Image (cartoon, rainbow, N blue to C red; front, side, top):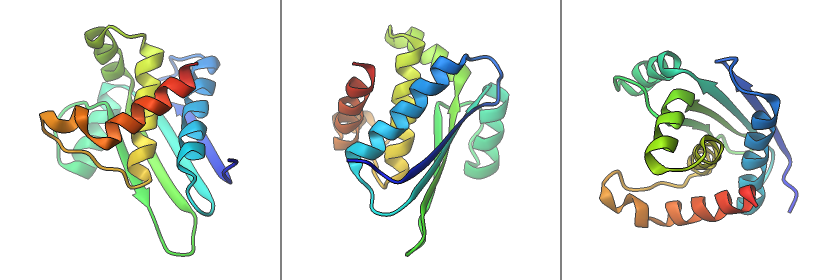
Length: 147
């Protein structure tokens, strides 16, 4: 199902090639198509280095240090759904190595995760996180993107 969406992917690190940015845009669009939100949607995804994601993490969440993904949804009745997603590129590299996956796969996973949060999905913060419905949905969409 086609979704009326404006998607912007930016690389604030100036270190990734255009094919990866295109893959991340496909991940965002595939997630939106799978979830079919009503109305117009605007999603921006910014890739940040450790310093950049740490700054966002501290300023908006009062957490110290780098993280993998931060999402900010803006939902106002009758207006477009807007979401800003920040992905920690350095953290994604570390996680890809830790989990034994390609960094492209991990970045797709983080983009999908961020979009799901913008759309209202939540998960527990404890060890039950991997069994949560959001995680299951995320992995279904990641598989679709990577086919």
